[in-house]
Structures are given as structure tokens and as C-alpha cells.
Length: 73
Image (cartoon, rainbow, N blue to C red):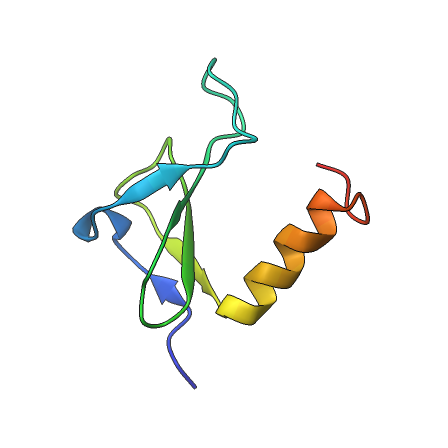
């Protein structure tokens, strides 16, 4: 099984903040595109903290479900 945690996510560059994150510092989620192991996701308030790596297909399904209202944002 592939490791699904990046222990120090600051070692990777190219993070982008989720469009659902707000500007006052709350609920800030960042994702990293084009990672070979999947889609890393981290808390932007803890850039040296861990990131969870989700399988690309699973992440795409999750995003699609949020966009269609199946999982409210």
C-alpha cells in the first residue's frame, strides 16, 4: 500500500487554496495538483504539518458529489 500521509507538507510546492475556503482564516484547505501518488490535502494554517493523500479517482468523486449537492459544502 502506498503511504497516504506526507508528514511535512511544506517540502512540496504548488499548493492552492480551495475555492470554498474563506478569507478570514477559517476552514482553509489546500490541495496540490499533479502529485504522482494522488491528491494531497492539508490545513493551510499548518503548512509544516501533515497532508493526507487521497486517490485521484476518489478525490474526483468527492468533488463531483459536493458540486452536485449530494454532499453540501
